[in-house]
Length: 284
Length: 165
Image (cartoon, rainbow over all chains, first blue to last red; front, side, top):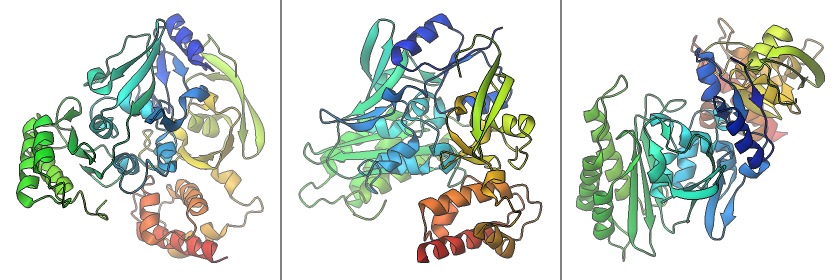
């Protein structure tokens, strides 16, 4: 086997590098890939995306947030709008890894990682996010929900994730998680709730509750219909029904971290609390 | 660094302000391996290899990162600072190091270089950090002798002094 480390400077070069070296692995921040290397997974060559400046941006384009695949978690935190205390994405970013990890781990890497490693994905799902990908045939945009797979994302082998996009919503948001400890661990279960007041709708997505992060449509209906939009309040009964419906959408596994029953219960409790207090200013 | 089709490559790193030529290195060598094994900078420690413990913390362009998770060859053109570069060259200690000596009940000492590098960057970013800020900010550094209370107090004191001055 011949090892390689390719450092393309543009997406065109990156696509060509993957075409010419099909066994090479894409490397973004490296926090996952190099950890695997240290665990003894053999290297089959790397194509580093770090030198592609166009993948780094975090900004509003035509009224939609566009997060470049190579934007780091620290880049998200440096954006005052995305990381305000009321923003679920900022809350999730703060919970991801450590300061060292957040200086390297990327949006694209987090979406592409499997299973519980995807801290950001429940939040992005609750924002109805789409992903942009580029390949030899050009670029396309797909709903994030349609590319999620248990061990990564379902793209063609020669395609590269370049950005994730979502429309800003107007209203409060929450991201809650439980994990083995408060930092530097994957969430055992997580819940992202996004309220859009102009359309009087609630969106909720669950992490650690199914083979991929999932939306909970029945809970969304319970929330959208149950919230008193006039007074901006949520009753205990509506919050409890919301939590129960969210838990119904969960099909969690039992593993060495937690049982399926624990995860389902955690989803119910976190969803209930998130909605119950969603209109309160200072409960992030 | 030029794209290479071989398993070995040569490149130049800027470590503690000096250009260091690395020849004939494996393309998959981590920055930690190159610092310790090729440059003899053994102050930066290896422990977990997965980014959980922070004992390999160095600064790249002023920000703390885990050297065990960096491919060394990708570090060209960046300012890499290790504990050897952070520490005064005359053998004296920085105020942060003095405070850790005073406050922390350091036992084995293995985590200390990483803890210092992490804390130094934290204080730069958050002068005046509270004890709670310090606990959250140092979450990427484990001390298995569990001397956390002393570390937190040391870092909080230096951060307070920094914001007062």
